[in-house]
Image (cartoon, rainbow, N blue to C red; front, side):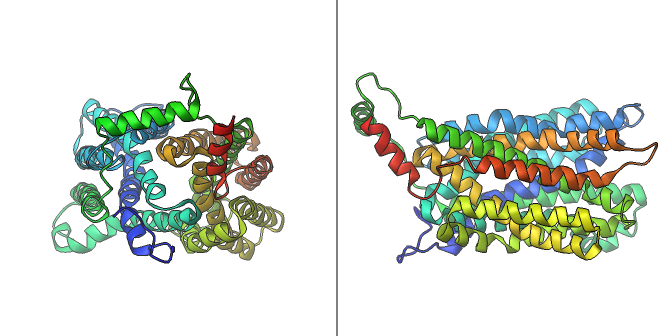
Length: 452
């Protein structure tokens, strides 16, 4: 399959869903990892008796974000320049998914800390080497003007991975109900964890098989003649000094402002996801199991808004659609903070989830448009550098704000609904300076640079 477009130049949803299996593999791994690994670490005999056990767990859990910031742009760029019989992105999945699946399988099985840490560190590193390539596969096979819809479908497939990871424990309980009845509490916990990670690993292998056999990225190997021709054309286009085509000053400014806006956006959304349950428990008096449903509701609303967000971005423009999303969610969160009404909370979560889809679905295509068609992996890496940086900074900064605003032993978790709108407002301000990223901009930029 060399394209995910129909004969009448519409997005082929079936083929795009197949491409999305790669992102599903990413998402199911992370949702299980983030749900279970903190508990596994906290219960490890070498950590649980430390006076700073929670800090130790937090430092270990941030490894994936640090590796994402450092390695995802690098391997995205490497994939842009990869030429194999399997294409430029699939080779990274061929080694990455099986290796990660096997490392993933052993995480709950290691009880010795040093062995567990080696497994976790190597797993996080390998994951960071194939995430950008797997996400860049969609824009490789979908033209610029349809990437909003394409990204929506990819995010929906990622949502399927999130759901599978979320219900994995319950599925294991249902399937092995009779076996679990004969085990004590410790045995039940160990059995469920082992099989949850096994299920995740199996799904990852299935996702790889789908992409490998049903997507079939085109062979892009270069013969010696092809390479010589490409070099000659590059020399002609860029001058005798072989200067590479670069972004114009205006494009660089747009890219930087867009990445900063993404940083602020992810600061807000990651902080909400991290502390929503805590806020609802201590400020609103909800039970933990009920409070956790709010995060699920927010995620479900985002999925519902995905396809409309992609279509609106194509028809109305990406920048306008993204800005509308931030204006809506900013207004809703401030309204809840002012009124403090439960009904306003539900409106903010449901409508806000749809509004945030306007942002997440259109920002990646916008960033990729600035970079041009030959740099999808590189600019996907830049995109994730911005969002992963926020994942490192945001929750920690909000936690510090909670500490600074507490009165005695009482924390003021309402400050979350000041912090998030401020971040959305800053993202909106940055967006005002973004002048590039709509469909066709990269083609015009190449022509402009060549003329110079």
